[in-house]
Image (cartoon, rainbow, N blue to C red; front, side, top):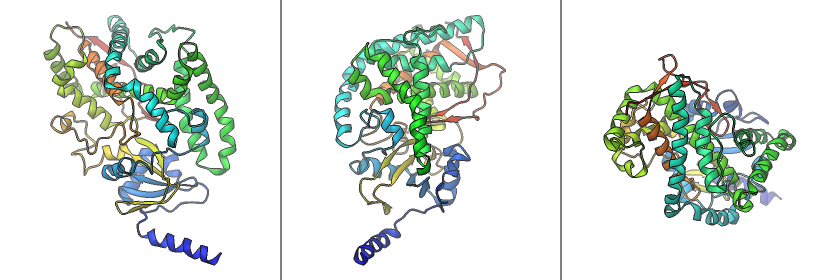
Length: 444
């Protein structure tokens, strides 16, 4: 027993000098007040000022290494992906993913199997076949916005943006869509509510699990959202392959939510930066001329618009944190020791606002992407083998939505003042507070 204890102490002391700075933790709650007292990304920004780009803390009783450096993030989840291939196992995520069986939360060999299965749907060739679906949904969203422009009514674009992104996924999965009108398809319209509630509750359940003494409550809390997921799958299984739907369900929800949130931020930031809005419109008009829509082949001729979309993703990242990874074994990377079982949380928001990477990071400036794609520091879809499988699909639908909105409308606030960029909400994604705008039709 003494020999074993000596070995443990020796092993700990061997790597102690490689530990990242650790924040003093309180019993039971650890350092969770940094997240609870503020939006998580704000709390972490305060810690970065004191401890630097990598530090250790306890979220409840779970030791977590927070990484705010792009080179270290790539070294961990890309260069050492085998050791960090898994996302943490949790009651909440296990319930939502039917035992870690879907692409988003699968572990070890299950993940490789599901990734191979689903990867066939996201090849470059397959994505070309999806473009008509995206164009069709963009047309329907534009016509919905046009009805408000013609009537001069204010509009909260949230629901329409969400239906645009979720309909693309629904069309791919089960050849079904939700109406943009208020009176939606009663047989399938509730899927929007299912998805929004599930996305919110996934984040909340994982926070509860940070505290060991609250774990018994998680099962009670999960009962309703787990039923929502079942309802979602049951609603869809008659329209498609149940296994396919089960494999992609969590990805489907998070991806649809993420795309819609990005479009919402794009609209808000175009209102608040009218010079950028007009410059992007002028570029679009010079390329498409009298054509009625922007299409993917136009993308190479629209560098400023592409820079605007990237800057929206950097300025307020819809996904401020890359989903945590779990260390299979103890490892030293770039002179940082990460023990077995620790979680690694990559803080993309911090990278996006890091003064060492970006000039004037708190300023919205699309020009920063005009001659530099910043690929070494810009990771909106993650990095490594578990990066977003639907990245190219998401980029296409963002480009088509944003370009055609600007081609057809001048976007204004309801009172000619900037829309507040504060009052954010955060579950899995960083979302703007509810806002209304006016769409003014462009002269053809």
